Image (cartoon, rainbow, N blue to C red; front, side, top):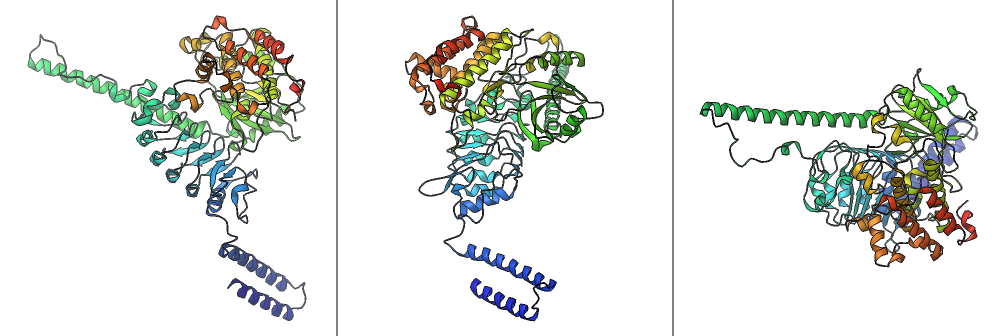
Length: 623
């Protein structure tokens, strides 16, 4: 049929050309445009009607997903509708035999838009990783039909609406991470049906209500539900409003000295008082929830253009930037959510590109914290004087009416966390030599804070995501000094618990008192990440009630150290790897006094590692 139509169109074109022989005729050009358009449409029809050339159903589902997105960076440019097989598309991995899509990995791609429900047509999908993008809208409930799904990563987006109860159908699900979004409603009880689930993270949302305790949901603790102002339940050691008072088995006790009418009156008064207390508690909880929700909805996601004003003051520390304050503020004023490159406990980070192509990082932090503006500026002036090759360079700050902006050098390779844990299947993992280089550099930066700064600085949040890397994989410790800078007042300089679960020293979690030895412990956990390739709360041992410290300690006590090392580090010499493991073990000792200082850690690494290790220590992965 398509061939007959083409022949008729060609005949019509020839007849029209004979009537209008001048090829420069405007009517002839217009007619040619119409004919070419028809040819294109017929080509598409022919492709669709040919079973040998049509795109697979999985490919069609992926294209429907793509068409819902704003891919300004061209990350999905390889997703071409003329392809027969989508298995070579960016982020897509298929089964070798069936050619069905089994992995869709698109983290950190700066993709924005909604998640199309057609994605659920990938019914052989085992891993869906869309974290750290700019997705908004709801989580499609249709995902509940992807029954082979084992890992679902949607964290660090702008998703809203409820957690679909349909996710409770995913009987093979092992990992569910939907943290750092704007999800509302309650935690569905259906998630308790996920008998294989070993890692759950719904933290940093706007969820409310009692956390169900059915099935596997009773196994998860505070870290899975943290930073949801309206949640309550035994998992987070917070009683729900209706559970403020213990159940009473008999009548409410009344004084014995009064008559029956007085007793009745006292009973009613006590009941009204109890109901009033419950009502006030509910009101306060509701106000806290709505305040938290409105902040996430409208406050934390505002463009920086709403922060900069005429009263904003820019302070630069080193005087070596070839820009005026007006130029820098103008570029900052143009930043919005599309420029976000990360977020964490201390604020949101934006990528600032100047007109000459130089790139900087702008961290937006809130106005809470240090009591006076002068104290805040004094602390920043101290941080601005700190320069070390293994510390992120603080260039300056803006003190705007509604927020504070810190300006840093931009590190192009991102964080150590990303390079160790979030690589694409086709990307080469860090070699052992590169991991050693990062370990020593990070140790030097931390030792400088502890022993060479005046006053000395305790970091309090050492973790792999706070170790940033440049093009040569040289590590730079970030966010130093911010924990103290953002505390509520001067009287709590060392007593407010900050930091990240999995990295915190046991004595710090008990007392909240920060010390250099607490930083040493956290650094030891980072060393274990580099050695093992596992996160501090990796699902493989969290299911056994352990973190990476407990897991490593168990294997070392059983003389099974070989199982600790990341198989991707086979190029490393056994002696070097064993030496680093012993140094890490000394850093994570339960007794803080038995841990080495950071300058001692640096000496141990340099003396015991660099000398006997290969000479390509600073050459590997440097390009």
